[in-house]
Length: 523
Ligand SMILES: [Zn+2]
Image (cartoon, rainbow, N blue to C red; front, top):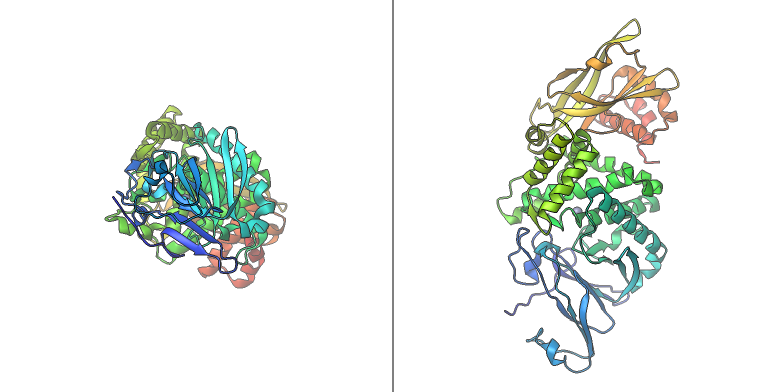
């Protein structure tokens, strides 16, 4: 079969051709997700049909080409390709000089994960155990990236170690290449062993501060790497589970930064997770949300799903699920899921069943279907408020009230939260862990009856659930004086965000909000 098509322009998908007008450098790269592989070769372009490929390319001699596998044969030609290679290009007249490359057969992968990138690249190399690592950048980008090469490899290697341990599954492919290109639509794309990254995520782009951009770069590297287990090794069967693929990689990259001691110097990057979560609250606030799981009538609807509900609310509820069943059961469930479906496809139901079995083995009670119904099939966010009655300096009743907005009115959900109780004038905090909130308007927290009356309360202290918090007036008064000395940066950041939301909703005057506003920053 002979097939040819035009290049895609920057901003489109398919085989994109970018020409740098300053240097005349040409860069070509593919971007197919969700279903643009058929722009380059005829195929059944859907995630549940996996295949292997043998790629053959002809390029100018100074170009490098990177794909899902290594090169098997490389031949520089001056007039015509040798006979054994020309069979791959029956309709092509070779211009000389050029390089013909035949790649080894690719792993078994879905069409959207196929990739080729070509151009005048400088290629840096390193390795993780016996997995070769490469980093390719345009020659004209070398001066921008050279000081970052060491840290990009360092983050990649730490991420590989973390994910191998977390999933208890070795890195499942033979190599790992990362290619920076201009004109990429997204921050990155996890094509199997040939990750394409946008030059826009390099520090020094588009007016972002260096630190913010560097943290974003670290997050994107880990996100695309995580997909090599969750998404590339085991691929979701259909696009209605796109949220699971993206939400999972989003959650895991931040979870890794938060939990892994190897990333001690990147700890603040994990605070960016809340910023992402907050964008989902904003979408719900504008009533622009949708249930995380959406029916996909036709493939063309998939592009609508790349929004912050899919990525960020999806990530938040998966983190919640880990909090509910515990990290051990969550990891064991994932390990079983990856082992059972490797190099194949699976559904949300398969993942939930694996996690449920692991939870049962750890004697954790969870009605996982009810969990999915509450969090994946509804729209909106809950607001939590503490209502506390005090008698003689002792808590008589501690009630958590729920409200809801952005979706169906009065939809209450089960939450598992930590509660911060602040005491005295120095703000000593006692954290009450894993408090269960029922799916009703009022939940009485019996375990807090009889405790000394706190000076202030911060619900959802460690941000374990997807919910906003409305502070009571006594707590606001306390935090106005105490926020300056809070040394838990995450709690301080949460508090400032809750105040920002309260001000936006007309529940806090500007003079008060002004005190909290400076702490919306990450540092
Ligand atoms: Zn992703």
